[in-house]
Image (cartoon, rainbow, N blue to C red; front, side, top):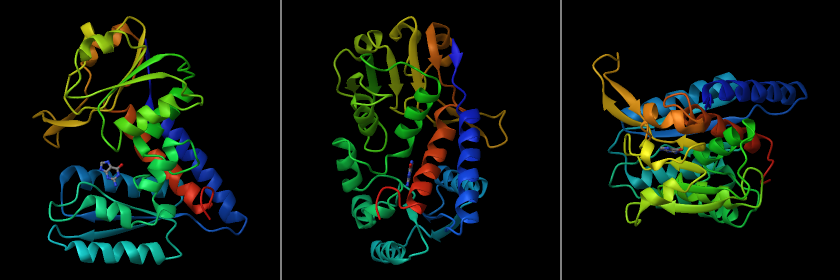
Length: 293
Ligand code: GUN
């Protein structure tokens, strides 16, 4: 069994990005600039955004954090989105989700200029991904593809089960795994809360990508000997032994599943660090105007 070290891979990629940024700047180019909008004080969102800002520093990017209280109006937020769309110094930006209930996330996502949508959530980027055109790809699935690539994991012709059908992870993950590409070229099944015999689907899978947000959902009896298991779960569960009072729990019952796997990602330290580094890669692409002018 090989433990996939997302922390080490992400550190390596951040170094690669930082080296490229210094080359760009030395040649007289512009330092990439990522802006992030954070609404309210959700603990998870605060942590994610703080980590994104920290990653920008490590990559040599400029970053801007724009904060609003949870009672900000949809109109105010849309106005800021438009301002960032027009700001030539900002190469890419994100609006951290979830947003308060009185704000339409879809409306906000669609207001972002797709050429600055480094989250890859805008319908133009999602549509371009679906038909295999260059675009910004959602960070978590792109990070998983990068792990599969760097660990030389064979995906061509393999049976891949994606658990979960979210717009951010499950759907783009399935799209990438079925893409005519390496990694890719897999036979993909997407399972969700209404799937019949999800256990049997998993038992037949060469690769399981678990993104349903249910702690310890994938158990040893669901996993084929030699399977590759990628755990996207990051549910916060109370843990009195931790300073924060909680720990992150994956979707996979790691202790019993790991011995059966050829490769497996831990939680934390697997997919999580790759998500942030994928956003950094998209920001570098945005800075270079590599996808859209
Ligand atoms: N909330 C959870 N994941 C993400 C993400 O990748 N981007 C944004 N903007 N919000 C999120």
